[in-house]
Length: 227
Image (cartoon, rainbow, N blue to C red; front, side, top):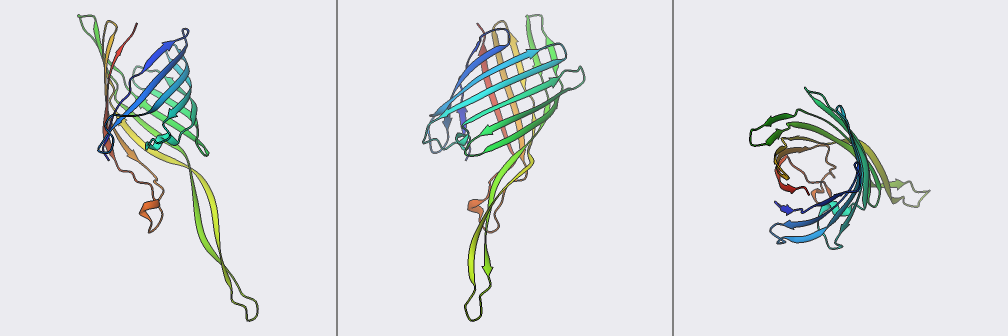
């Protein structure tokens, strides 16, 4: 199902490095018309130098109980991202912990190249072609029947066996080109992205129990004003 969303965000800087934000989520598709899905609360620490950017964050979602969003299973998330800045390529690595009915661990690695153009109108245009790899744990279960042999004239019996597994694997590749145009206190943001899901969990003969995913293009458009 194709969907669009609106995510108004309010962000406040508590000090030079500490910030907090709140982001309501509104979803629009064939089944729901701009329906409120929940709010994301974020508390973070951001430290920047000429060559490094470090961001630590704690995310707490408050989704409606009736929300159909896949991400509504997420109860909390915390993580860190570190970027090494370079005129040719920036390198980013990150790690996170996600809490739902189980605990999952994720990692991120990416490269990007910033292209910056300043204009005489005291405005600036930034284009940042990027490539990212996402990896993390996957929890799944396997069920099968194990037959126990009979004794003398007694027939054997079958017993259902359920086993839980966890594996760490690449989850997706993503290409994106964030574009930012800034003038004064205003910023216009546009990010086209193409994501390729990897290693989807499948159940033989049971498409209803298998993960569904396909390569998809999506875009994010934003407008930001800073007080």
